[in-house]
Image: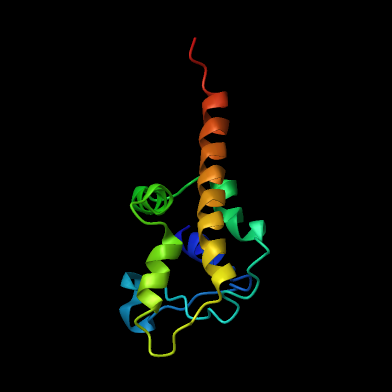
Length: 127
């Protein structure tokens, strides 16, 4: 679910698989290596990237807390990214519309989570 959020925020539309360390067997963890399509289309929000979250209506509390913090402040994600990327010797790294897209996409993810909560509440019989 976290990877879906990250991919959506950066507009990475080609996540097809993940890797693991075989040496760790069942105690391994996933590695998501390919971010080559990230930050490609600043003006298009590919909602299908959020399908895992919208279909399962599941998200980690810590991820939700972080998204809410990006939305409510004290600083939006775009500002945090600007400040972080400003330290890079290759600055500017991202085009301004990509930074604006981050904040717009945070709102979209949060709205999707709200929709899931509302859908779940509609199924509950409070009588």
